[in-house]
Length: 105
View (tube, rainbow, N blue to C red):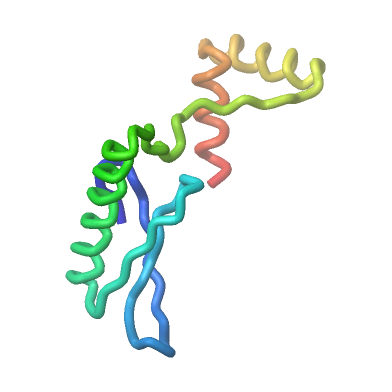
């Protein structure tokens, strides 16, 4: 599920006979549960809203999932190789890497 750029999991507990989940991509632990898909969706959105409101009250910056910035440490030879491949394809290194990584899914 997605809401306000946050992504949540959906799982089923046979023991409790309910659906539950938690926000992914952040270190804070935010969970929610419901007895139907509709109620889980409502609980998920309420959990996100509550998290954001609580952060404001505490003066804390809410964690944002995945900024889109990735720092990689690679051997200089590999750096040179992929920079040449990017240039040869008429793309920036960033564009080339994003495209290449998207095909690895």
